Every structure is written in C-alpha cells, then in structure tokens.
Image (cartoon, rainbow, N blue to C red; front, side, top):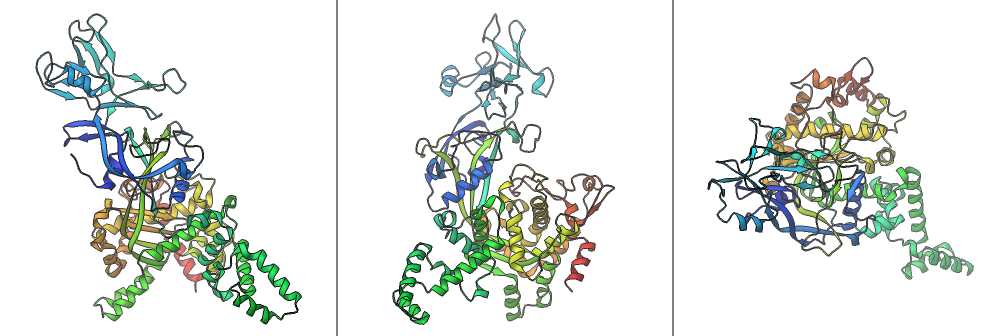
Length: 625
C-alpha cells in the first residue's frame, strides 16, 4: 500500500489520472476515491467560487445547472482505488503485442505474465490517447485479416515517434494498422478527430482544475449572501465609516431591520402621548428596544455606503465578501504588522535596529502601505474537475471540456464531488498603497481622475467598484476590454511573482514550496508556504524580522533584466527565466504578467510607465511632498 499526504493526493492521484504505481514498475488509472464529508467549511461560498470558475468553460460535463449546495458534496480523501492501465503489453524479446479488456482477462490469458510465444518479459505500454472532450483510452492491437491476434507485433520502423509506429502481423508481415485512433466517445459527431498516442506522464493528459481560498471560519453565510443590511455594514467597517459617526459595527448590527416597522410604530404611539424625546429614549431602553438615534446613525452609514459603492452588475454580496475576506484574514490569522516587528526589536535592543527601522519605508518604496506576517493562516485547497489538453494551448482551449469527477464511493448518489484539504500555514500579506496604484493608472491613461490620497474610503471604494473579480479566470488571460481590471491584476500578479522568486532565499524555503493569493479588489497579495509540513519553520517571520531590505533590493535588481532580453522584454516581458512560476505556485497559470508593468517599456506605438520606474517614483514622491 502506498501512503501519501492529502495535498499530494489532491493533485497527483485524482480520479481519472494515470499514475506511476509500485515505485514506477507499473502504470495505473485512478478509478475513484473513498472519502469523508467535510462540514466545517464555507460550503455556499466554495460552491459559488467553483461556479464562477466553471462559467469560463464553454463546454462542461456532469455539473448541475444551478449552484445549489444540495447538489454538491465536499469531501476529503481517505484512500484511493486504482486499476492497472493501459492493458497493452509488448514482449521485450520478440515484440509480440497483447491488449486486454480487463485485468481479469489479462490474468486468465497470461497466468505467468510472460510472453506466450517466447516466454520473454512483458513491458506495459506507457502510451495513452486523450481527447478534448475528456475521454481517455488505451492503445489496442489491430488483428490481421488472415491470422487474427495470433502474433501481432509492434514495428517501430526505427523511429522514436509513435506516429511512425505500426501494428504488424508477425506471421505474414502485413501491416494491420497505425497507432492513430478516433475518439470512441465522439465517433460520428462533429467533435470527432484523429488522436495520436502520447506518454501518460505528459502534462496535457490530465489537468486538474483547482482553487485555493482563505478559510473564513467565522463567516455567517446566510447573512453575507441574503442580508442586505449586513453586507453594507461589512463594507462600512472595511471603509472605516463608523468612527466619524461615533458608532461601532456591533451597535449598528444590533439594530435589527426586522424590528424597524414595529419600532417606528411604537415611537409614533409614544409621541401621540406627548412624551419628550428624552422620555421616549428612556422607555425604549427600558424595553430593550433600540434607541432611534442609533437607528438613524445606522441608516446614515448605510446611505453613505450606497453612495460610495456601486459594484459591477450590482453584486453587493460579491464586494462585501471580498472586504470581509480581507478583514477576517487579518483578524483570525495571528497577524503581526511590520511596525510591531520594529517596536519589538527596539524593546529587545536588536543589534540591527537601525536597519529594521527602515523596513516600513523600504516597503513603501515599492508601493506597499501595510505589511503583515500571518502565523496561522487557514486555507482550503480544492479541486472541482479536470480537462484533457494543455491549459496554455489557446488553439484548443474553447474545445476543451471541463469534466466533473466520478461519483465518490462516499458521496450521496447524484451529488457532484468537490475534493478539498484544509491546512494552516504561515504567510506574508502585503496591502498596497491604493492612491499610488490609481496615480499609476492615470499616468498610463487608464483612468482620468484619482480620489484624494487622504480619502481612504473613496480609494477603497474605487477598487471594489472597478475591479471585476468575477471576470478573472485562472486558466486564461483577462479580457483586454476589461482594462482597469486587467491592469490592476497584472500589476499585483507581476509584483507577487517578482517578490516570490527572491523570497525563498531570504526565508529559507524552496521556491516551489511557496505560493500566492491575489486580492485585486483590495488590493493585496499573500505569499504563503504551500508545503504545510513546513509551516512551523518560521521562515516568514524570520524574513520579516531580519531580511526585508535585502529582499526588496534583490527583487528590484532581478526584475530589471532577463537573460533572454531583449527578446523577452520586446514580446511578453515575462518568461520562465524571469517571472514564470510553477503551476503549483501560480494562481493564474502565468497569464497577465510582465516586467514592463514594473520597470516600464517604450516602443514606437506606446510607452508603459513602470510602477517601479524612476520616472513614476519621482512623480509620486513630488506629489506626496
């Protein structure tokens, strides 16, 4: 029995994936999982996020039409069931080929698992067929018209390419077939096409589609999705509107909208009895009713939110959830602000205190307003389906079908499984200077006006109103017509990759064990340790406590050049040598990246002013006084 960690199983042993088995001595196909149900997560939120991701696929198979929690099951793996696949074997000695319809047939015909003709060793064929519809099948030998399956051999014709290989009768030497095959699931349809065999380890044989979310342990899903007053109060808290009204979030929350009509009626009755305002308030307090002044304050705050926030397509739930996610991440993750690190170092008379005092200023230079180390970030990694076909193949991305996983042994019949794993890890959260980003957008001609740098509520509202997070798919570039969304996301994503590539040295973790989360409507990023077995190492805290300045300086130096320049800068401005990360680390498959966004670029058609360019930094420093 093979034992694997849940995170490894979640991505490398999913249903429908061919795998190395028995230390590479065999190939198997994961048929299904045995799992247990997961209840202590935000099920409604997870399903809504999954459905938003699913919407980007023109073709999908097996998913319910409505995003109802009752149609899905959230599961965590216990063990995996796999079967030998493909069931096609070639003799190492005489090249005789065998193919079987089942393991039972194989064991019945080849009892000693040796070649019937010569007794030679049999090698399992490591080739499979895939089609964009999601179907996977194995090579099958083609019989001779005269001698049937008596002795079919694989003739490679001296080539390493399976496209040149042929099935051949070992008796009469006639070719019986090439190895090309039509998709059996699409045969006779307009989607049918010839498929060529490929190694089962090839990445486009099986592409899992996944999401990583912050686990919002205290989220009241009913209220965030259904209670309009609650949504607006969440946004008011995020924009810090309560202070100027001399109120608190909880006080306004205690004013139940359900009691408003009854309260208004009672006040009217008391006024009819010629009671003064002071006496009415005393009566209401004694009856544990809400003071009408508090109701007035709440209504004024809500009106201010309605003036500030006008989200795309009127989705107040979506923007409220993004604001709540950011606030809850800071509240529940044992967060420590960079300024507290400085204060702690001063109390301890740290030998590098003069350098540590410069940390906040150094982060401000690259546009970061607030920085936190999160010692206990709760995340949920989930997988909701798979495709066959490379995720970066734009020529066939519209043809690829997103397939749901087969019904789990532990799943109620008819429900669609979503597999997930919860974990706690350490991370760094970087919140950006909103005014600087908007000023940069204005300098690049994306927007015309920028709110005052002192109006934090208006700055926060701009990002909630203009960044359309529901139009961002992990698996393709953001539509260029969504100019504001694309530019903001590309900036954050490029900064995230630039910082992550240099972070590993400073925090003592392997680059591939680090990953990112992007919050474009805040705007903020999280760099976290994705290898949960390492989360107690304290590498992120070490980085925060000692290495902010070398981290930032190395990032600025590294992003300035690429070994493939000028080709890299003249084309995408991002490649595997400079900004690209592994698919495990990147949330957006290396789309919407560019060093040009950071350091600037000028050609005959246009000039991009870089967010970290000297030209832009001089301008914002002058405007900041």
